[in-house]
Length: 255
Length: 379
Image 1: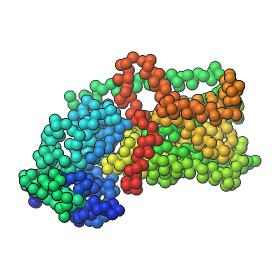
Image 2: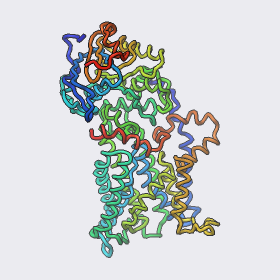
Image 3: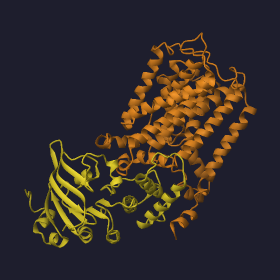
């Protein structure tokens, strides 16, 4: 359910994406209001991650436009997204294994700031490192600042993945299956943290874990085979027979 | 506990104490060695080792921190030497014979090499992994034939009788002076590169090494970053080129040929391509083998004469690659670990040097990156 009267932070219109002959997205229209919490559900291969990659600028849509805060960024490269307040996580963690937890967060924070090419340290670095330490605490890694990422457990790496995205105080946060590979307790903790996000933050979350997705979201979109096939509140989606069928694999085709 | 308290309570200074002590000891040893050794040793082992070490450091910097194994460093090293040769000779040699002041020659050599490195880097940085390796190798081979065939600048005979500043003197006059200069430049290059590794530029370069896709999504222009890292490495290589031309007084295309290109890579691997120190360790080992093979008893009898230098260095290379992917530095680290109490490595393991590469070699890292390069490499 779209919050009316608020600015649309993200507008996707007619998004199609083809990789050779494979149509990963077949005309997706989604508007997301600022502060909205949107969950995207769908079986593997539904096009969810492709949609994220298009929003994040990893590749341009074949057809259609992506607008973030009203600006057409369909063909703008990924590196321009942080300036628009976008941060994302990846389905498979993409961290810097050769660096420590603190340095991973530090690099994430510097990415949003100016001075990527600075070859001397200055007092800003202390501020960045304090922010990095706070960001680590937020994802329960406060005691692991000096640990190299390659020696973190899988769960800790997922936490850091999330911490890096949140460390830049994004206005649009894209989370790609943040709960995958987490224990039940960790999922609970993740859900609580997502619920505690500031109200101004817009969240789009891809998640297979229905408990996490439906308790965090105030609107749910279900994708299948590159298209949006259902949309509604978490309660409506829970009650939707078609969604159940897709997840349980009863129907072969829904087109 | 606030974040600041947390920072202060961490033992950041102590963790590198042992490593630093070792480095200080090594430098101290290098400072006093000339007093106890012959001029030959100072010139042909120590000076040559240090200047090759600086060239290898430019390669290792790119490989360890940037995940870019560049074979163009020998070319950049040579360009610096050729520019100086053309600038300072006064006639009687190939080249432009501009007869400029030797210090002006240095400025030109370093300046032109650095600018060239920027442009070569801008091209090569579009690719990663094996493709980067091949492109930089191509640069090296082009450079070899350029200086061989363009007789305006050199020709295959090379440039001879290159003058050095009075401070360096004539060949053989003050071997210690050039040696101490090479030592000073080595220390400065090492300290500065290690420092840069901890700055925003250096840390994000290491981020790019580990995952350039993530880095772009966090706002970094990966291509610019790589290009500037390559430029910086070119600057370092050009310093080695200056020392080389003052040491050798002569440069020809064979100085930057295929054999030399590979020698620099071999030096880096023998020393340890994941750590900057490896550059100098590898270079000194390489030069020692080169100079002293003939003196090892028994080798002559089994046919490994001086002329079999490449066989011996090849065997060392093979043993190193098989036994210790981190080179001599890796062997040293293992020995230290065996000899020190347990408490050391627990405090030393994390953060002691986030500058050094991860346990995988730089080469395999950048290879793994090349798979995903197609999708985002042209952003």
